[in-house]
Image (cartoon, rainbow, N blue to C red; front, side, top):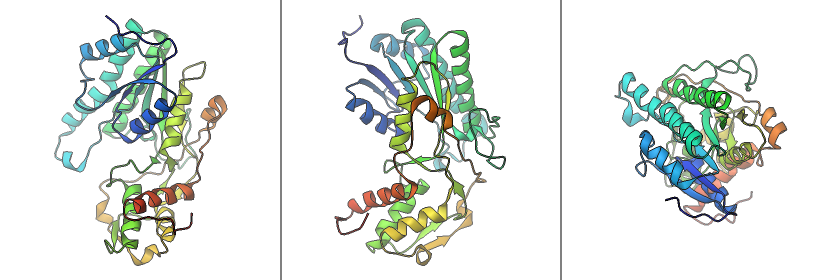
Length: 318
């Protein structure tokens, strides 16, 4: 028996709700008074077809957000490619098909968002990347994410499912794990300024990144499911910044010169870094989306948060 729902309450399933994007999205939808089914690792086996179909059938969502991702962490460095492919396909492609098929069977009017990645593209040497750029996935993460995109396109074109994909470029917030570059730099600036540590090691200050603000990017996800037609959208700022710029802004905010505290350790880089700059013109045109915060302000906000975890920061200028 399906649970009773208020006719005025919209319902959404968020798969991967304990990650950065899932937590920001849950906060956004709660403010809009959504009823949420938040799926975290261990709370439901999304690689089990029966579990997925039962969830979708019983909860009867208006919207489904597939944000889960299998990242190849340092702890998983000893995994074989075969095992990585298996786990990645299960999470990024097979489970996506299960949700798409559950929509067809149980909630044909539901709308589904799949979080894809800019890693499906080559670098930006031929210019900024948009929805018409030729995909060229070259790692397991990108290959399997692209497979999930193709599944969404198949169901969109052949089974009339409202399935849209967001091709996400780099986006940051204080909810990133501490080992992520953006948060690592923010933490270092804050702690060095408070004399808790005396230096930080970084791999390459000249790497170029299209950096956005995570709350803006989940707002884009929400907007993509409110328009009339499903499609695929690049979510990016279109602005290129180096790791050096990021680091300089972070340390300047606490009154320090990064050159006095940053140690360059190229061996920290375990893979070749490619530059990918996105063009979100289609997203802007169709939804009115724009980034709400400038790059420098985002970096300051990240450092401000880390300072607040240590000591009151009201005497710092913004």
